[in-house]
Image (cartoon, rainbow over the protein chains, first blue to last red):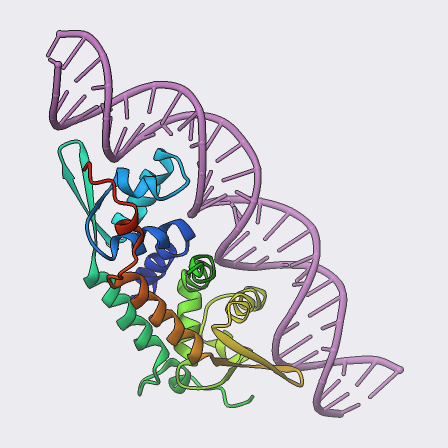
Length: 105
Length: 105
DNA sequence: TGGTCATATCGATATATGTCAATATGATTT
DNA sequence: AAATCATATTGACATATATCGATATGACCA
């Protein structure tokens, strides 16, 4: 399982207050950038920066519709995060700590 | 719900490959710092830095036992993360996007 | 085709992050 | 009391991040 790096970058995408708000906003449906912007206190260029991070981490789907960008939450990805957290926080058979145990402590 | 900042910092703690590995290691039980260190390719001071971040975000419990530090995973916290993710990714009644909808898009 | 609207990119800046070697602290052992 | 072991802190450094205003791009409308 070398998904550590992969999910580290997903968690990095979630490690910002503004981006968490955006994810929350998208939870009840599609929104365009201008609507998201109106619910935040940031500049347009900053929003664009955050949306790029969310889209590149596949947390949100971005679809161009003429001049507008329409964003939706990628539930598959957020489900995968929950699955990953359960994986790394639940005892396993072949755990590193079991395989390579010092036992001197 | 102003837990955005709170969880943003928890996700920041999870946004590093090394720290995800450490969480995974702790999933099957208590480990001391020296055992964790042996399973990573980082210096002792770097490990100390990472453990501080994990402990301060309450993802791990740190208990001093003489000269040793004994670390365990705080399952309550990881459960809270899963709960939070479900909260911000599930449609709600009183969602920001519903309250303040532009509808021009 | 010129103007306006929505979004993206650029350049600058201040702050945060991850890493190490060196050193400090504090406990255990001899 | 001195030496050793486990961990924490410090200082230095390179890199990443979040933010903005200014500007560019690209779509739609008059």
